[in-house]
Image 1 (cartoon, helix red, strand yellow):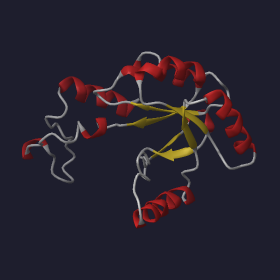
Image 2 (spheres, rainbow, N blue to C red; image 1 turned 90 degrees about the vertical axis):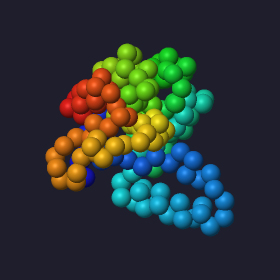
Image 3 (cartoon, helix red, strand yellow; image 1 turned 90 degrees about the horizontal axis):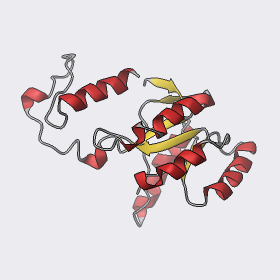
Image 4 (cartoon, rainbow, N blue to C red; image 1 turned 180 degrees about the vertical axis):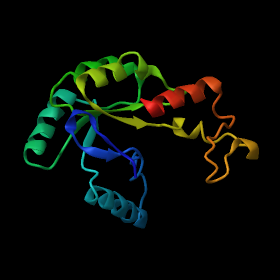
Length: 175
C-alpha cells in the first residue's frame, strides 16, 4: 500500500486508514469481533492516538505522559464541526500535537482557508475524516459509462463529482 510521511513525526503511514467512529456502538458478540479488527490494526502499526477537543489542555498533559511511557506515538486533535475550528487552530500550536483529523471532501471544505495551511506550516500530520461525505458522494447512481473498466487506466467521472470537484480532487492527489 502507498505510504506517506506523517507530518513532522517522521512516521510512514498508509494513505488509506481505518476509521473507528461508531465501531463499538454494538452489543453482544459483535463487540469482540470488532475489537479483534482494531487490535489487529494496532498490532500492524496503527499506533497514533487522536482525541476530541473536550478538555484538550488537560488531556494533552495525560497524553504526553503516555507518550513518554511509550504507549502513544503521536498526539492528535480532532473535531468534526467547523464551529470548533478556531479552537482547533489554537490547540494546533501546542508543540505536543503532531497530527489533526478533520472532515474534508468536496462538500466539506471549511478547513482549506486556515486549518490546512496551519497544519502544513506546523508540520502536522493530517488525517481526513469523511472523505466521501458520510456516503453522500458514494450513494449517487453511477452509470456504466462513468465507471472505468478495471485495468483501463481511466479515472471515474461519475455524476457524484462535477468538473470543479474532479479538478479539486486531482489537485489534492498531487499535493
